[in-house]
Image (tube, rainbow, N blue to C red; front, side, top):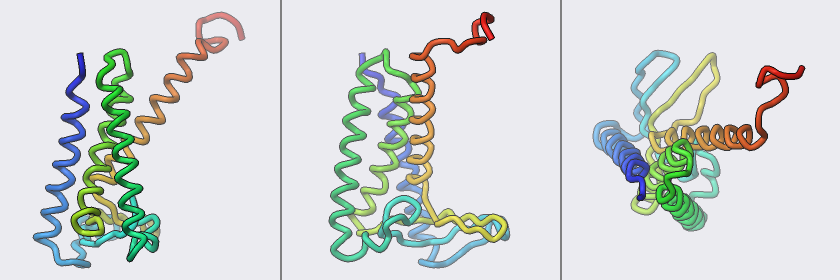
Length: 173
């Protein structure tokens, strides 16, 4: 029996991403910055032609945008295919399903923006001790969390396959 919760998670990530972007797009002027925690966190309405955290922004402008959109669409389709396979197999790790759901929902959210607007709305802006992180959005956060879960699941699976290490079972060392 197929698991439905990963698909509901991906849909929830997509919906939360779209709702938050819509709120920013309709209530905050482009390039307006609203200090939430002075010197640490601002809401700032920006448009990103690149990928997550403004990577490849120069390549995403102009004719390069179509290539970036096609690449994003292909990667989103691949993640959805992986999620489909994982959700059909109840023996697959729940952590893997959660990771793919977060990545799929976030990728779909940013792909939606890229197709409709040619860029992605970013609005979460952090600075710490003079160091500034590029603005990002809910989709970028979900993709990052999904990638972290994916790495944790791979690490856990590798440890499980390797078996107990010397000293872990009370014997040796």
